[in-house]
Each structure stands twice: as structure tokens, then as C-alpha cells.
Length: 401
Image (cartoon, rainbow, N blue to C red; front, side, top):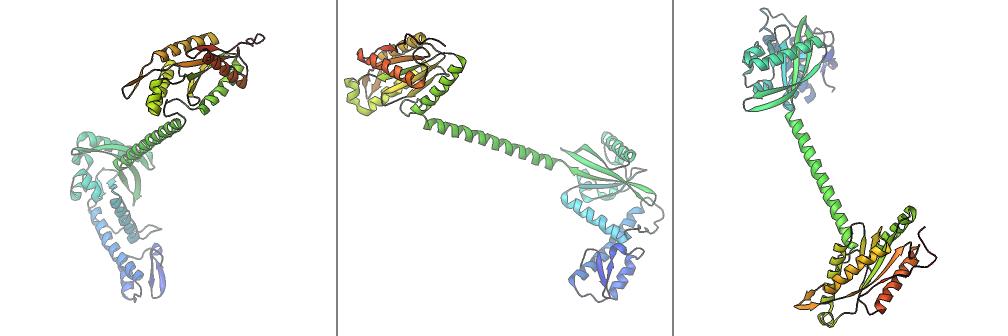
């Protein structure tokens, strides 16, 4: 059975089309009809409740009129159904926590407030009926509400506004939707008040949650980058592995070729281990690798690239540096290595390095010849007995392009 439809003597009666039929007449019809279903029983209960609410609405109207003539139904809705719809709306607003107030537009006196409105203002509903804001609230708030009411009346259409209301120790911000309803030549100002605190609290919680998610995403990204970076580093020296150096070398070669600038590459190899390092075994060698890694990280710039190139070999790419400058820097590194003291199990471990230096474009103008020239320079330093820095030969016919 559809909403608002009742079966009398087997014929459907639509409540929306009752017209002049009053609640009392409908009840008499129902009493003469046998009720067969629970839906029909519910419909009869609704009608009985409509009649009671209609009487309640008429009694409220008596607050402003010495006489209480019967409320004529509108052309589209019967009086009982109008009251029923008002009751349903009131129940919905009450359930959602919204406030409802109805005022006489001319006098500003309350005709009706729902329980939520009375509880919010901490005033008994019976005291509010027939009173004005000026009689119930402080002058400043009453003036603000009266101005908003007047604006809604002048606007002629539903008007939304916000109001901050202080109830005891708590302050609430409400969104009020006001509209004017004409009933039998009388203007009623209806307002629905929605507390914005829950919505703003949800927005705040949502923003807080989104902020936490963003922080977590940033932390995850940093962790991912850190793990990726660790995977590309040699655990002993803390330097990048050879694959990173090869990639950096290709990039630097392309950039320097386009911009006609120079750079240098360096191969550094630990000389043969001394007796102390041999005695301490793998642990001693690891301590030496750590020391070389620290020296390379502290002696190079962020734009340079240092890596562990082999078992006892390291490589450095010096961006924007020529052959002479690279030689001077590597000579300083060689001296630091020769004077560095590493201790393992109370045993002092000394070490020296052999260094080969080549540069682009003086030594070579392509990657493979450049690496080959650096290898040859390193071999020359080792041939001299180690603990030397050797420069790659510069072909006579090659110059800066």
C-alpha cells in the first residue's frame, strides 16, 4: 500500500485528495470498515494521531487569536495531512539535532519551537510560546536575531545566515535558514537552525587525518628512498657502488660535451696490505675500507661522485674540475691516507693508496678512452712503488673544443 493511501470498503482513498473530508469523518468511515492488514491498521493509527496533532496546533494558534476558527485545508493538502507532515518534519529535525522555530512575522513572537530549540536556549517551551527574543535573550543577541529576521522578511525568499550563540559556558555557531510562509493572510517566519560544530569538527578531523596521511606518505617515501639508497651503497665504506658511478659518469660526459666544460675522474687503489692488516684479517680490512670511505666523503663536494669500484679500488668523479686541480686534491687525499691511523683489536693499521687521474676533454673525449687513460695512470702510480699520484698522458693533438 502506498504512503497516504487507505482502503475503505475495498476502494482506495488517497489522503492527498481528501479535500474537505475532516479527520472525524474519516475515522467514522474507518470504524464502518473491516481492517484486514497491518498496513491498514498503521494507516488508521496515523489518522488518529493526525487528529490529536491538529487539535494541538489549533490550541497553539489560540495564543494570538481570541477566536480559533477551524483551519481550512489548502487546495492540495487536507488539514490533517498538513499537520502530519509538520509532525514528520519536526521529528526529523529533532532526530538530526536541528532547531526549529516559528515566529509571527508581524510581532516577532514565537508560535512554535521544537524541543531541541528550547533545550539549546535553556528555556521551557511553554515560556517561549508567545514571547519575543527581547523578552528571552540578552539585548545584543536579541537585536542580532531581529535584524536577521527583518532581512529574511525583506528578502522574500529563503535566506541563510550564521549566528554565534552563547549558551552558558559554551558558544555555538549555527547556520540558520529562514523562510516566510503565508497562512490565511498571516505571515509566519520559519527558521531551521543547524549547529555547525559537528560539521566543523568532522572537517577538522578529516583535515587532521589527511595531514597524518600526508606525513605518513612522506615518511614512507623517505624510507623508500633511504632503502633504495642503502641498496646502492657499499656497506663497508658507505660509498655508492660502481653502477651509480657509471651512471653519473655518463651524465657528466653528456653535460660537459654540450656545455664545453671539463671534469676529472680518479681511480684510487689501496696498496698491498701491511703485516698488521694481514694479521687482523677481514675485520682489519673492513676498518680500512671504512676509513677510506670517510676520507672520500669529507674530501669531496655534493656535486662529486665517490664509489667503491672494486675489492680494493675506489673511484671519484670531480665535476667541473680540470686536471691540475684534480691532481692537487688527490695529492692531499694521498697524504691523509698515509697518515691515517686505524685501530682494530688494539692493533694500529696503516695504509697507503695509489692514485690515477684523467680528465675530460684533455685526456680523452669519450667514456671508454677516458676510463682506460685513468687505468693507465693508476698502473703508473703503482709501478712507482705505490703511495703516488700519477696523471694520465695528454695526447699532443687533443685540446679543448
